[in-house]
Image (cartoon, rainbow, N blue to C red; front, side, top):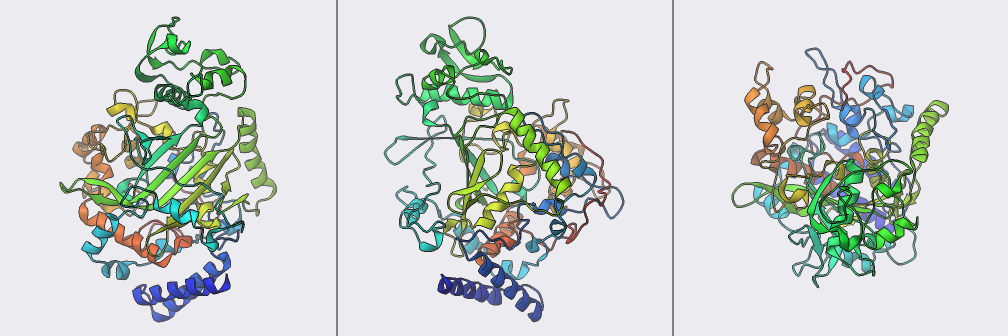
Length: 568
């Protein structure tokens, strides 16, 4: 292992010295030394040590809200507001002042935000970048999964528990979707995964800020089979729609089905006939109000599985890929074949409302009683890390050559902060509650490669406000760091007044906000590739085209933001 570490850090040193930082020689040397020491501390994959013990605090939490000309922006409200049960977190106070668990967290260790990557960017040609993003690092030419093959022939440095085999998630998504969004393997057998389209979460996940992404869901086999235990795509469609109705707490349209076949009144019209929707009718302790179909119906009636508003079934899985920006022959933005990250999560335990409320209250008590105690995570880089709310998370990320490798313990801890402890999630998830649904193309069950953002409308809040419009009114740059000048110039005039025509366009076509122009997309790709080649993820993954000016390197807890509280 020691020899491998020396080899790894020596290679990174070479990359740093060749690329340069746009810094002085002494500064370059110190940065190289610091990164080498940090990676050695991690002992690559196996150890559960962390260079940044607060890696779960997102870089966005250090943004400067106060504007130079007076007033304040507020990108914080999208994550920190009053949660809707069964999310019992209320982070409204974090819109008003900065608050960190410990003094340690007050220092921003996401160094890549403040670095000048122009030297590295200049060394990557447009052709090199364009060719790079079009090469898949996930699928082989025959459609087989390259990463799965690498995991079967397990490199020792990936074997966190040192037992000679891979015990984590084995990638089994083929991105081979039928007309309903169901994934199939090389033998045309359904994998259980189904892809869906959704409204991107405001801020960093707008493609204009550097990445495209897609999300798939898979329910346990029990929900995919008929009463005889045989896979039935219609049964699975219905049960996925039931889950969607429970997560969104609203009616969900489905293709017409014969309720007599399943003996369930799906549309709640009082008859067992034909249904074209799942009617949301649920209240605690009234299980008979809704039901699954097929084998899951029997299990539910026997009390073997649970159902509750805002909660997924146990063993629900999500797969989320993060990708580069690419364009097709017509110049339209598309997802790249190359994958930056494969993010995987699985629900491993059922927590009822009382348990989830106790978890939220325990976070408050912990912060009060032990203000200097940082979070501790169970798990490892192979099996995944647990978020404390019934889910485990695991991921893969590009190595310096662009191939996918397992994330380290610290790189996985990076994901935990957003998937626990914020008011914005529904059962620790972001995408499914934002899934496109009734009246939208294919009711939202499609991949971005089939249809992009063009013509997709904005979501609205319960009071009628448009979501992205509200975000831009309170954060005109379209990213938390106030660095996206392209968005600002598109939606605001030189005098700071809103471009009314553009905002009106946005309401019915979010592509005007989501899609960067080709030049910006190419530069963002190059900035991220520079991080890949350095393997400096411990310093941040957000591609920046210039050193951040509107982000604190240090900020004390309790410092006022001067922002006005916004409710979602």
